[in-house]
Amino acid sequence: MAESQNKEVADSIAVLRAASRKWEDLQKEAKDALNAKDCEAYEAKLIEATQLIVDLPTRVKGLPRDVFSDLVHLAMFAKETLEEDNLFGMGSFLHKRGAKVGDPNILDNFIEKL
Image 1: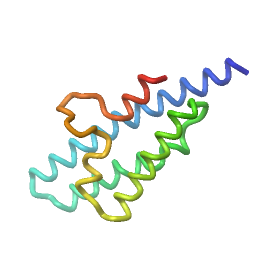
Image 2: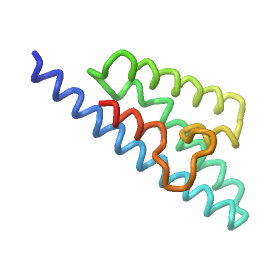
Image 3: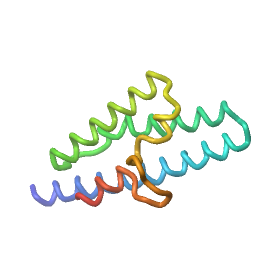
Image 4: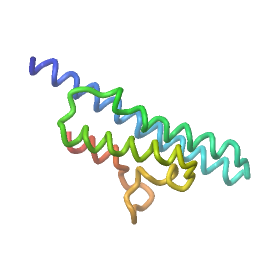
């Protein structure tokens, strides 16, 4: 039983790492699109990045209750930014206020807790 839980957590960490990298890549692509004045591509990349976070709780298993709860709340916030068409929120919700370029995002912080 403990071995299967460890595998679930390891698999979930891999999912979170991949999502973190993908989110950062999509944010960079969104910024590049904005710099190129391609507003449609900018919005599409932000929406794709945000949807990635909305879907995360369904893709992980075996996480400690506190981490999973934080992930669910993050996903709910991401969903709200989509519903409100809040582009600023879509572009910033994985970084804490005052974060600098290169600082870990919230998903990276979740991974460190595990």
